[in-house]
Length: 178
Image (cartoon, rainbow, N blue to C red; front, side, top):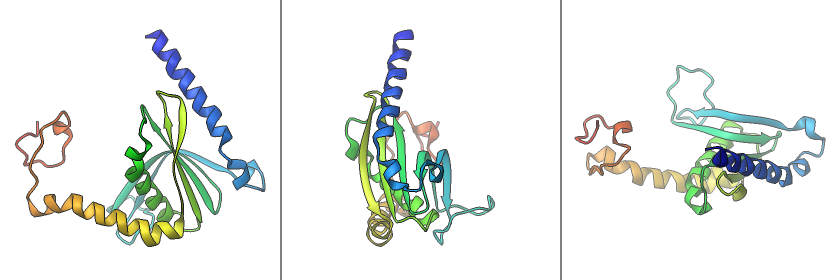
């Protein structure tokens, strides 16, 4: 409806104003011309954790980032969510984005991540990591979580849980796949 569209527009404008309050300019003492902004950027890493430039390579990790501000040593990632009451709910996803960006852009020293809550019109900080911490500690923790998630699939002990997402599932042999 028209009212809903106006509320959504107002929320987006509130988020844009909040983006202006992030200390992006402080990160870039040489001025705004040094800031690179990318939206809907796709980053893929191979199994050597290097950025894939050749589309023929098989990716190990792939991330599509909604909005990235960066210079040569620092980046700010902003992910849009229709609703983000609990920022902690997105911590693993944002950590994954941190990992992909840290390995894809090896000169970075620091990465900050935010969630833009489109419903509330608020920008919420999720994390701030140095890339050395991401590569040394957080990557190992993430891979441990990932291994635990993938083990049942690898072992063939993955009890199906029917849901509305069944038709999009990649497990073709599942009885619930439609």
